[in-house]
Every structure is written in C-alpha cells, then in structure tokens.
Image 1 (cartoon, one colour):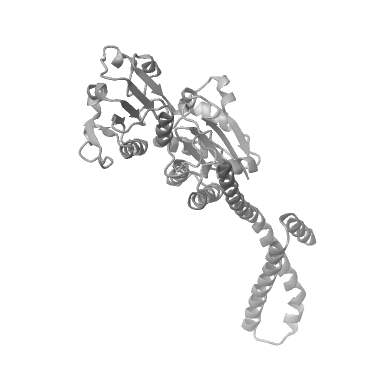
Image 2: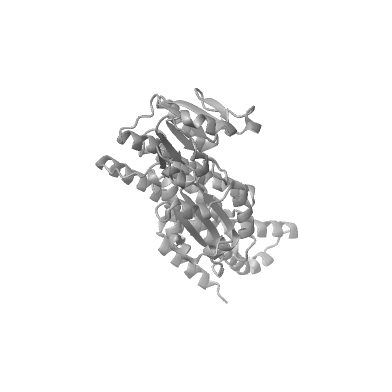
Length: 409
C-alpha cells in the first residue's frame, strides 16, 4: 500500500490555470467514484478550494496509474504544458504535506481557519461517496486533529484570517479604509457570508445579493441588506467596493456590462472565486481597480511568528508520528497474528501427547485445550507487543522478522 497525491496551488499556478482543474462538490463526488473504480486504487479524496486542487489516493504497490494523466482525462484537458504547474508527492513527503497544509502552515494566508474546514469537508464528501479506505480515513482525520490543536494552542493568526481579511488589511496598508463605504457582496455562500460579515465589522454599509428563487429562505449576516442577484448592475454604480464570491461557472460581472455604465465614484472590485467571477477585462474600465485571489500574499515573518511556527511544527510532528505508528501497526498486525498462530500450534503439538495420557473426560480435555490455546495466544501477544513498546521501530521489525523465520518451512 502506498499514499500518492498530485496538487496545484496558488504558489505554482495562476488563477486561470487553477480554474481549469477546479471541482464543484457534485463533480468532485463523480470524480472520486470514477477514480475509486480504477484498478489498484483502494481509497481516494479530492480537496478542491479557491487556492488549490489536490487529488489523493491510497493504492496497491503494483498500481501503475498516473494521477495526473487520470485527472487530465477526466477533465478533458490535453495541454501537456500544464503539467509543470503540478507537484507530485509520495509516501512520507505526501503525508507531511497534508499535515502542514491542514494546520494552515502552507496557506496563502498563514494560519487561516478555512483550510481546516475544507479538509474536513473533503473527508466527509469522500465518506458520503464511499470512496475512502482506512488509510485515507486515518490520514485525513489525524491531519485535522493536528490542525485543531494548533488552532487552539498556537496563536499563529489573530481573529479569522480568511482571504477577505487579508484583502482588507492590504487595502488599509494602501490608505484605503472600508469604514463608511458602500459595499456589495455578490454571493451568499460560505465565503460570501464571511466577506459580508468582515466588511460589516469594519464599519461598511453592506448589501448582499441573493438569487431570486432563494430570497425567501436565505439568511444573510446580521446588519446587512439584501437585493436580488438580477439587480446587482443597478446597485453597482452606488458602490465603493464590490466583492464577488460565488460558485457559478459563469462570470457575475462581464466587460460588456461596464461599457456604458456610469460610475458615481471610483470602484474597487475583489474577485474571491475560482474559477473567476469577474471577467479580467473589467479591470481595464475607467475608475475600476480589480483584485483577484492572487493579489493577496502573507509576507510578514517576525521573530514571534517564527516561535509560533516552531510550536506548530512540533504538534505536526507528534501527530505524524502517531499516524505512522498506526500505519506500521496496520501492516505488522497480520504478521503478528501469523506468528501467534504458529506459536500456539507449536505448543499444542508439544503438549498433545501429555494431554492424551492424562486421564479425564473427553469434554474436559477439549475445554482444557481451548483454555491452553487462549492462554498461549495471550502470552505471545504480551511478549510481542511488549517488544514493540520497549524497542525502536527498526529493532522491533527485526525481531518480528526473526520470529517469522522460526516457523518457516
């Protein structure tokens, strides 16, 4: 069994390249089911976020499937030049990546909370689609545990460092405050709600668009107003800032919509979607400044941050060690079971003659043999697992190999 992954993220690829490989929840489920059906694949999970796409699989050692080729075939992508944007990881390198990623240590915004939720959601979707196996289950669950511990024990970031928080921080550094500004948020999904709430907390006047067919049941953040999605272009000229954060496959704001639009003031647009919500050419319109997901970076590395990173790294390493103990134990337990059965059989052969010569009822003899089997099995287990607890992993594996040789035919 081996663990493999391929990934593309904001460090390696621009948003337009990432968009080609992005998945909706429905498509991710269909893709995982298709991958799980491939020969040699034991379990798989797809992690698809605004900043990254990762395809994870536990597979048989002899499996020859290329995750990158499979992904391109599934997506209908035939541009071989895109492979340079992907990173492939195997074994310990892959495991380490997931633990550090889930802990917020590889995010575009260091220590962000959202990636932890996204990894949990990816695992949950895998379970719903019945495509996870024990390796994927335990790997992702323990990575989430590490992320939770860091979130509660290490102050990597203050507050909720989502992309919109970083955007607001960057605008402030440029002398632009959203306090008192008229803002519109297009989209009322998870990211849209975070954006609306963040802008509201900063003192902005926030209006959220909702789809007309959902307007009667949708909840929006407290203190925000709502308009129907179809009214967005009528309201937009009144705005100082507009955030678009939807899962729509189509542009929410297009260049043609701005051709004859008269803005009342300069306009800041922030596109938080992958694929893009706002057509890039909109940024060329007079009086418009457009930012996308790649516009916001975290570059600050203070001495205090380095200390926190060290503490976070320690937690990650501890949780990784626990995972490897489980993984090694998972592989070694069948071998220990075989040794136990051989040892019990060996004991039975040695005492069989004695039991036959011992006068007793046949039923008592059978009960005694069963009791001896159970006692012998417990003794062997105690000895072997005692060795595991007192020796390092390499020495213990050597002992197991030596015990196996005792009963080789």
